[in-house]
Length: 247
Image 1 (cartoon, rainbow, N blue to C red):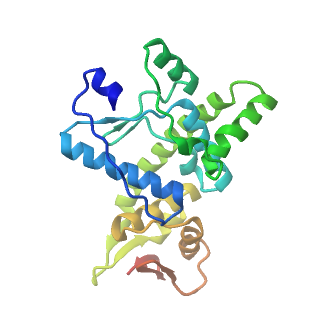
Image 2: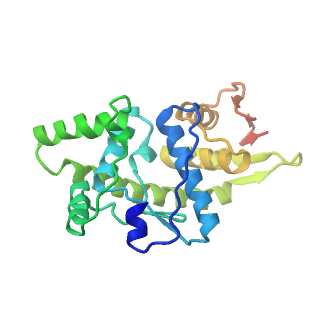
């Protein structure tokens, strides 16, 4: 806070956040931070918040997503722009940002949690990524960041196609239940079909489907043999003739 005041920045906000025990310590801490960001936006009326994530953070995010097998979306990494959040340093190495601070006589603040090996991101940062660069040569972090950017571009394009096609396939029955044309859905490539299923359930019921849940619903379309419906959180997916029904 003292450096910020010395630079003439105002207002300077410091907020102590409460981290819940739900969802693991790293996820809980992230949620607490982003709630604090929302509060800061409201308190100051700011148009955006600039975050200090670097190319190294992006590479770590991609490696963690790959290790967890959480799907292509987890390999997109962090977006340079996400609503009011901006990440202007995402194309720079962490060491470059530290050197820039040194040149300007600024002292970076190091979060002590960033050296705690109990956290998977810290182990990736301090152990895994250095080994990859030692064994495979420099440029691994940049390659991972490029991969994230390319996958994000592809993912955004597929999401846009899924939304456009969903508008053609989705309707309502007389009871007000959400319906999807199963024949149209069956004609789609798997990546598009599964995106549409996830999109419909997320938009209509506020539920984020896992891959296994998505594939179970997709089987009602591509492997239909009279099986019973699929129980999802807060909604049941069933096949009725040539129609997929969510109720």
